[in-house]
Amino acid sequence: MNLHEYQSKQRFGKFGVPIPHGKVATAPQEVYEIARELGGPVVVKSQVLVGGRGKAGGIKLAQNAEEAQQLAETILGMQIKGLTVRKVLVDPASKFVKEIYLGIVNDRAAGKPVMMASSEGGVEIEEVARTNPTAIIREQIDPFLGLRDYQARNLASGINLPREHWRAFVKIAQSLYACYLDSDAVLAEINPL
Image (cartoon, rainbow, N blue to C red; front, side, top):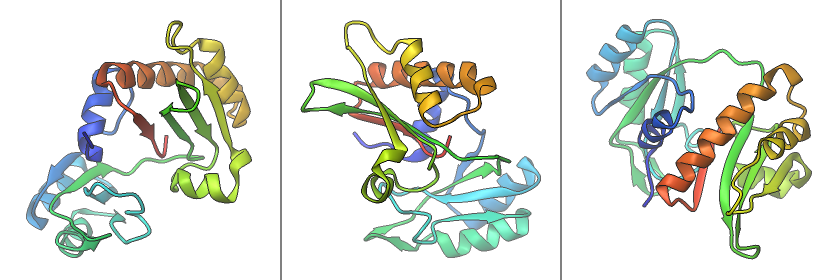
């Protein structure tokens, strides 16, 4: 089963992954109301089951509710890789210093899950794997032992995350792993974290 971003965020939140508290809309007027309620800048994100939404113009930053409504008028109904956008997620815009990627996938060759992290978040991880594969740090997880804290710290160190953020990173990695297991998923990712 594939989940839209908003559905994944709801699931992640149940496992303690910190997520922005946005809402889904199907009409520009709804986007206006949500943006007004959230206050400040928001991100209007198309909800279709494909990668590359940002490159296709399906993810936009709005400074206020009026701009969010205008963006929604453009995004709703647009086609992204052959899929029509019928819903958008309106999230509060986050201030960040650096975007990172954190994900877990079934490694069929090894027969184990692999957690991956990259300091190049916010872009398609497949593109990073193609153009800069050394930017992706991997840790194979023994399914009988689960994700160990030292493995999450290895990932944090490997992407040069400042040490003062390691504890929070480990907690998020453990929460993502718990969600992955509970969902019987083949892929779970946060991009950007």
